Image (cartoon, rainbow, N blue to C red; front, side, top):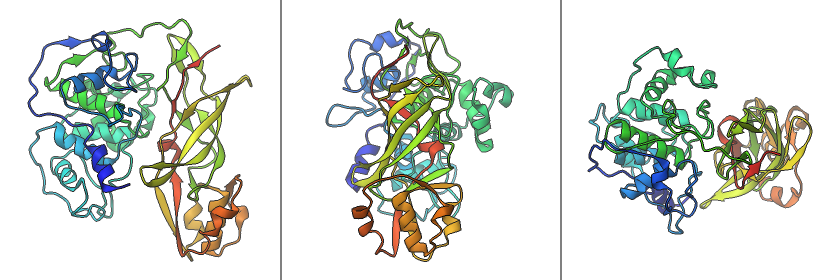
Length: 413
């Protein structure tokens, strides 16, 4: 991705410093007249947060008039957002991360977010600025930077989440603290935190807005998706349909991760991990199978892969068309010539082209030890890869990367 494009992404969500405290509560209906963004409709779940911030001039969209609410947010982009959102004193000296050069577009913001306690690095003195930030990290960041601590029993507070066991141990106290203060916004079901899924632009906007509301800097927004603040009922729907933009949490049971060669397409099957309901009616039951494929997709100038759904198979065997896709995944793992095959493939499924590349680089012909996914038309794809001394393979973490977003309405029937 170009430096200019990265900087453009980071500047799309920014917070002014002159907000005054308001004792007003705004309902979603207050924002239902119109939308300034082409992809944030009056009925979109995050419209109250996005529009409220936009009305104050604190966020903006893209030149084409869109907000792209379902795009993931990188750690560097999140650092830039919190840097502009809050005026908090420094707690520690900046860290010279090995993967954040001095001329990196977000270096100043990363230094600020680190020194003020919002964000930390990884082992090996790395910050991983291009990694998509998981929802749990975003919430822990806000709790840490704003110095929020639990007010009551942590386990009791977190019991509101049906998937509380998925919250990492390190995060439980901060997640409890932000939950108590209504910073957590879960769509489509407030009971599911989905802590390890990548946070979207809409979700980060909601978290940031709620943080400002907690400090009395902006008006409170009532929403059925704010955990602990269900003061507005979900409007009943006669056709029990999931609207466009709904998230479908999934799991991939075949492997812990998937490796693909750049440009490779492979079919995989995902499993819906929780019931999806609308107006009290079950629309998609957990255990349903989603057939689709990982296809080549670019994020700016950076090659990646994206899961595109084709069909949904319900537990009763009924098959339905499904128009949904994941975010674009651009994480890579470099395989060097002569690398050890066992170190690469533990818990891994690989595309057929990736398997051929790995076999060629490692010199290990034991293709039978791999969980090889199908594919077609690999000849041209492989011709330029097998002559290299190292190849960047795309790596997909199903638990983090493969939550799906509906592109069109899906109705129960």
